[in-house]
Length: 389
Image (tube, rainbow, N blue to C red; front, top):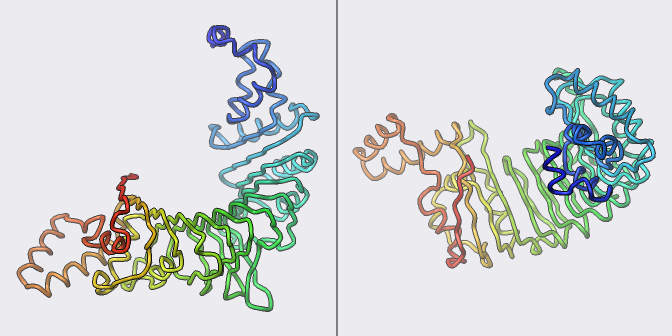
């Protein structure tokens, strides 16, 4: 390795360039560079980025020891720009407090913070609220015990004036007296928002209002509400995965140009979520559509859908279809539908199809006619099919 460094003159580069390169690495690997040469021996102590993932270690004990040493031996005068902590399983309270105290003592220039732990969430949110310079925040919060069903409320009082990117997992958004939850009003510069496995309480509407929001992603949320209201005049990209059960409405949806949907259904359902088609109608000026084969299968369950003349996707330029593995429950529903259609033609055809299913035949990933149905107003749109498994 040292011969390689000499040959490539990497060690002759200025510290700021080397530190910039090292900032893209996991901190464990950064520390390991200290054995390369004397030039590298203490360089790791001045790294502005700490990427601390327990998965990089053989045991949690080794990770805890490494983490403690990093916080102790890193040069305390060096600005901390980014910290990303991911700990699988419950983290020791003492260790978490050490990390949070370190963050609080270096929060003046801290721009990016990511924490994914199973721990006391109050301590974490208190620490986050002190990091006023943050531009990016990613929080995945879980209670200490798998058997502890306590919820983490997202604080409406969180004031991070420079925040542009927010990624939340496993939070609860609470509504007010007007029956509406609007948890993101304080973030006046928000550009990207990701909501994953979150819920809404004491509200019928989740309102997302932002003049600056460009990218919105919603994944596997457990919303027990009827409406998602978007007041996002500059929204460009909308990404969704999960069971579509809310109406999406609001001003400015015509600004959306790219939509990605991976829709699912409950395994015991036989009726597809009706709102799915209304979503496409709301995104009137959509130009790029990324859709999973599962979504196309869900759409195909609408009775007589292929006979409908619709008004959406008039400006579509491209459609990308991602082929997903068959979902067991959905596959069963598709088989039932195909058998009913076959039986409507003849008993012989239905019997033949049933034998084929019993022999291992699966419904097609892309149901017959569904792509032509979606493209009836944009027949020249480019279609690309990819396999992701």
